[in-house]
Length: 447
Image 1: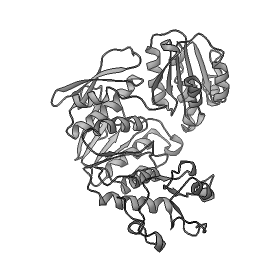
Image 2: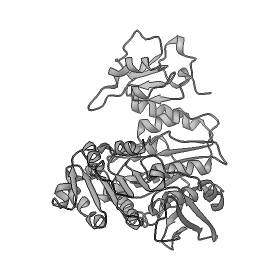
Image 3: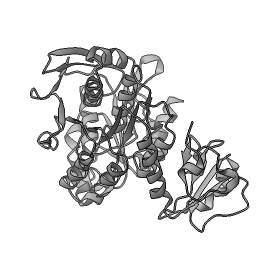
């Protein structure tokens, strides 16, 4: 059973005191499910209080508002808080401390958080009662909603910690202190907020300030993370470097669709296992291996992890390979996000696939700060052997100096119209920042 409203909040209408807090919490009225809670947050562009009627229409069983903004006249409980986002986080923190969890695992990094979380959840679910986010809920309110939905029987909680500006990881760590911290990578992401790659690194390392931390698992191949851990707590590196605690060895330099294959060895014990998974790209060996290394820390063997992950499939928009035209074509759905590290990794994999008529539809990489054009231009060598390159977004033209070998468009709709006129192709890669909307191209081809 969840905690009652009276147990969680000071000011609850008497007739609703005994009600349990709903197991679903939404900050978007469109995501409300019958009986769930809706939190009205005030943003820079919109005020969630304006959408309370829509949330009620969708069946909300609880409304949480800023103090003084109770619309009145509702026949469901309304909780007023001074600062809904932070007050709820404090409430979730209290709920977390009241649970007798085996471990709280928090994942942060510039890339790979959600794939790591999904793989780890799949491996641990065979031995533990695991609770994790439904989607990429990596903000303060996202982690709060995950915890408020946590069943009482949960043994292990998995969270994602994301950040767009300094201080956010420290705040998340303060509210929801992990016992195991995972760092997937540090890369030039959200530089408009952090200013430099060193700023990104400093922010990600804030996760290690948890007072109950007992282990750190990190990407040993990442140049910024490999020398960052000199802590008393146990730290384990994962990567292709031979000095890593968990060493990855790839079977082949060529990528064979649709599965990836590699060997993972625990260097201290010489335990080894071969992994295969239906996911795009050699770079995704890191999140899968980090998941296996974390499970190993929880007494699950590498072989057990390999067996569980043998039917692991990439999440939508994160390296999913879609087979089309009865096997004659394939499309790589990598459209959820893009930054220099992930774009490079995906293009390098695409270059190794042997097929005729390659198409790359690449959306611009956003939030890279003043050096954005430079990061885009650095990708140019990886585009040379691709027959059709469609670049979506205004940054590309500046970066590529309007190279006539490429097609430049401003929107995904324009890109789709061009694609409809290309008949002879076998492989297509679709990747870009989420706000570009390239997932709509994927849906058109998948339908």
